Length: 394
Ligand code: MN
Ligand code: MN
Image (tube, rainbow, N blue to C red; front, side, top):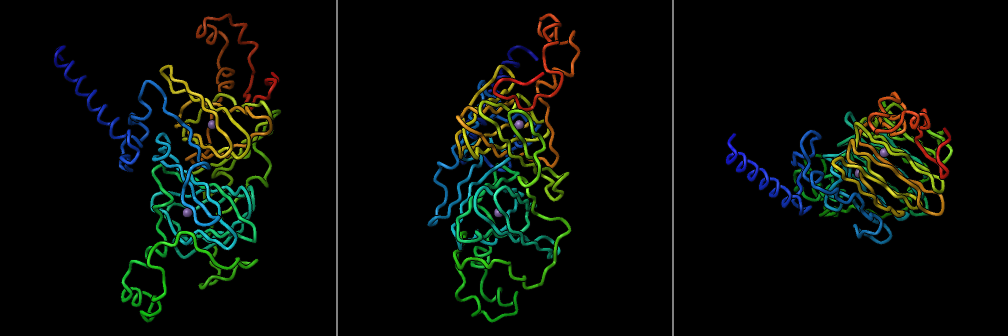
């Protein structure tokens, strides 16, 4: 290629990149067909000289409110970096349900923070499961499976939903009232073999939050009778022992090896004592979505090319780490910090910096860093994972 042609080529590529940046600058323009969602295609959001923000104040956002019930979401609109995972904070008042619906383009993973929730999910084959959830429990609904969420008892409930698609909006679900409200009555009458008048009083548009009597203590039998699915949708995350219990913190984690239906998602609760830190690490196969349940965290992000960014997350804030990017989570508050973490992979994988260093010969490290090999004799010989306030014991 001649110099002139090369210059033209570079100028052309630059203007294409600029056009892409302009398109992506407005979150409304980001569509699900964006090829950058594919991991091997350079992502314009992650291609700049600086890393973009990876924080969003979810609980402080407006969302959709109906009385004491609410839904606040973090999608690529609110947090453009979060292409792999979207999340929702939802609260339901007593007697309120999030109506029957499904998601065409995302599976749903959830963690109950406060109160009690009852779910009924319907899968292909007419399999149906009703479960009651308490704080610390999680559910997983495969993409496209229908479900309903009810607040149980006379206290409000609060839970965090995650979706394995950052473009998924909780306000674009396929709701039963929206559908039935838009189908002509003769067609409905034929479908169910009922008089058209049956549907006279049905809602004409999406109900979303449906309010009624408190649900019965024990769920009533479905119209078809019980037809349980082969795999359960419920896992008691915090009722099980933590996967990691270190000086400085604990990690409860559930992936598909423990919760087989959760083929596209892994969820975790990370608890850090005062001053402790989840060490520098990365995940080879998943993006990471964070929600601060309690306390304050400083999250760092390393994005190659000298790019490094730190954000301070308060309770109710969301953080996002792209697949393969280096990061750490440090408790910078005055008490315990708890972070809910989701990964868009059914198998959990990580590589920790301390383990990476410990797995290499000292002479390699000496040459790499231009330091005497003896320096690396002092480093930890195994994975630190969580570093307590006073540093790990060697
Ligand atoms: Mn849902
Ligand atoms: Mn991580």
